[in-house]
Amino acid sequence: MMRITKFVKPKDVNKKWYLIDASGKSIGRVAVQAAMILRGKNKPTFSPHVNMGDNVIVINAAKVKVTGRKMSQKIYYRHSGYVGNMKKTPLADILSSKPEYAIQHAVRLMLPKNKLGRKMLKGLRVYADDKYPESIKPEKVG
Image (tube, rainbow, N blue to C red; front, side, top):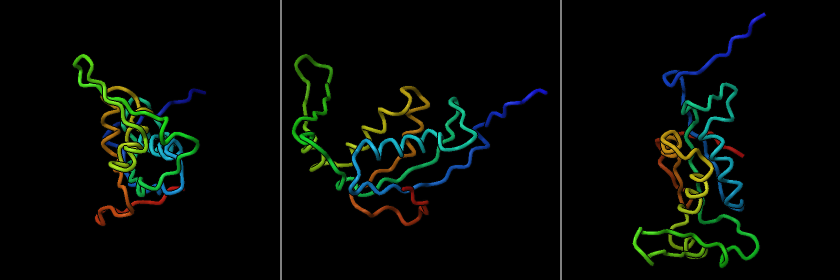
């Protein structure tokens, strides 16, 4: 008996919105949930070469839980490309100025590093508080 593998085509993908509340959860736990949904690994028809993941809204990014001494010891780096122009920003400064960046950064590093990963990342919306557009009707996750 021969089994036939069914591959999903991009036109057959139905995208839904999911809502993740980040208050009281660590950045990594929230990022893992979001990356799994964006990638489509929560679906039984997962195909690694197709953007079949759903869209994700993460709310309360400013209320994430950070353990240990990460607030002062975890450093985010960025470089302009010029000699001696590396900027270092601790997690405490990131969470006070733009808390959305910490979750977006963590999710981006968990997705594929190619064109498909950049397309998947466009389905992520992160908000510092619990307000998001009312036109979107998401399903709640964990």
